[in-house]
Image (cartoon, rainbow, N blue to C red):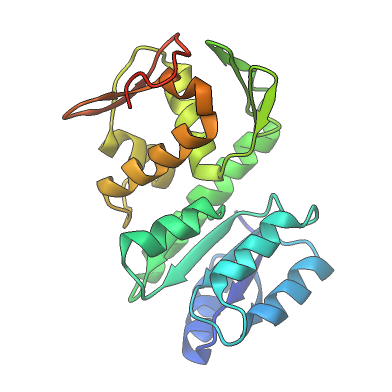
Length: 236
């Protein structure tokens, strides 16, 4: 995807230089920031097509940066790929739940990171360009273009990953998706998020669905499926 503007945020100069080298070879236009404060200033000041964001930053950390990016109307839809040496599931899930589209751990392969970035940008382009109809299951409406979920008369705010999971399941009601299949949909084949993280994400999704949580069932020993039923508590 040539000529896309990418904001690289990392406090290590050698990492910024490495990413700039490989991104510019692929004809991306790169702007760098060494702190969370500078990243927010740049992101609000000019449009970017994507952000590569380190977690461990001086001042405000990457978690706080992505929280602010996803709260500003001008930057809410910009995809974020998080980059960190922290590999614990809790840190990875925290980044995803805040709205990150993907998570790459250090040390990393530049080729793998580029592949993941391209996948993130490609998915966002498809979401913006495709005329996707509203998905309905039980009393839930899923609006892919607006990334909005309405259950009954209540609008539900989901993270990017929670929305993607619900959309995947609702498009094939009754089909059982394994945790691996769900991960492949979210991240592509080369992912660092463990299968256990899917359970954390699913727990958060059900909590937000509230009385409609029974629309998503656990198939023990395999994965999850969506059903035409809004019965509270079923499949918990």
